[in-house]
Length: 165
Image (cartoon, rainbow, N blue to C red; front, side, top):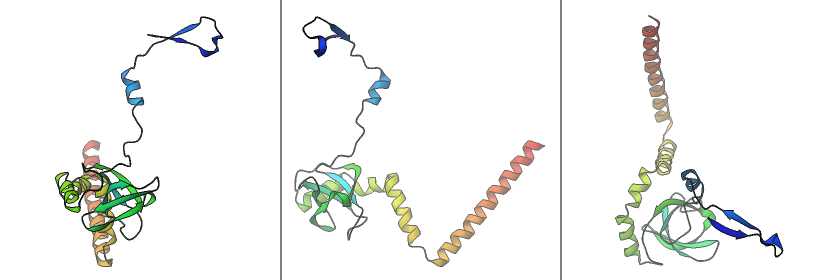
């Protein structure tokens, strides 16, 4: 319990007792809403421009709009934050590390593996695979979907027949 004197009391002695207890429901409510911060070592996905789709690491913050980013297969360059989508992955690197240090840190943190296991990464892999299909592949996919739907409907009909009998 804490005693709190109201600023509107104008010299009068009026105090309010405030209880500082947090229930488990309130603790989850008070957690920070954002988990992805712009920070050195944060892995980001380039969402626009010539490096579209690449995973980069923020190695330095230039100002409120730009960051210095680097990746094993690209030249270190500045990039606008509007071109970056921050991921949940963060690696432990110091400010503006050498390329060799950055590559070692990325391999130690298994950035590529963690990205491919994440739902976001899996979704992008599926999108790329679908975009690479040619007309014949799309035709084969359509036939496979029809075949699968037929099998599902047959099993459903069997189950309905069993429950009705």
